[in-house]
Length: 439
Image (spheres, rainbow, N blue to C red):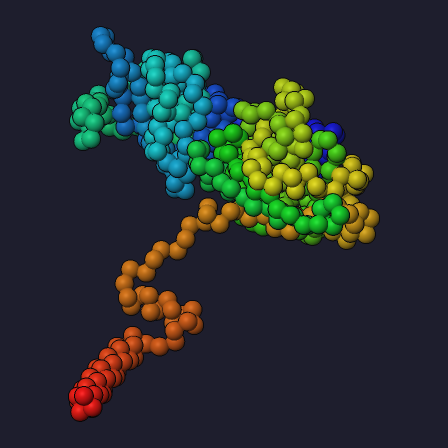
């Protein structure tokens, strides 16, 4: 549930992702993969999305368990997942589960996955383990590793690799909850990679004494990747603009996330599928930003800022995983009006919108706008040549002339300058002559 008993938006059912994936090989049977959602939420989500779209792939490499020696490229079966969206190669490294026999691994930066036939110590630092093959279906992997192969040498690393003479296709599907639609975020969860924090500006008004102010947040995708992706999606959509802190409890939290327009709230209830819980990696301390929730895997659009340290929200029973923190303007956040506490009826915000809040709770502080900080926005590329520069100036209305005219103008300016110089020289000559006569 939300901190202090807040309720999630009505009409949003709770869903879960499937527990397993199935790799189907026509002549060899099925391989059941138990997904590791907590360790690799992004990889699991994207692969479920692909599986729901009649996912396909092809095994092209098979390295048997070596009889002597250790290390790469031994003891694995590798294939490529068909990924028309191009999401898999954009995923960051996740988790750090050890790669033992049966581990199913995404090779970061590619759409290739492999199943380990034996342990590979240390590989987990750069590869993502997103699941494990059920032991009773590992026989299929062992059979693939026994097929005929030829060797090639990797053009960059020089590694000798065993490639199947005849690649083996497979189908990818979901099991467990496979018969039900799997809820995924409305945009790829991989929009923001790990390790690239994003700053967000929050413009505030109607603070204490009716004053205005601002605050800056920094979103940490590495803290809570699914929460960070959903939050930035809402920011980029402008969803938070004009919203009020309808639940502001002194000495606890300031919460927002319901749109002032009832139709917009209804639209988001229809498209904003609840996202899966992130593993909590950071404590709920003062200034950290968290999604409100109504239970497991129920986060949608409501967020809150911790006004104080709230260690009780770190209890295992909750799923309050901070994904951002206030880095500037916390003094303004602490001036958010908290006099109404938890008396606002959230259901009336859904049906009546801002009209209800303005009439009944006029002192509620408001988010005027929330947007990415300007330095996180990519500037347009500089024009590559003089003609492009002139074209850009003409389009902006700064210089409404053609390049040909500019050339002619330059010629006349140069001619006038030369005439002026001749005139000055002659004037100086006449002045010198006159001065000579005086002397």
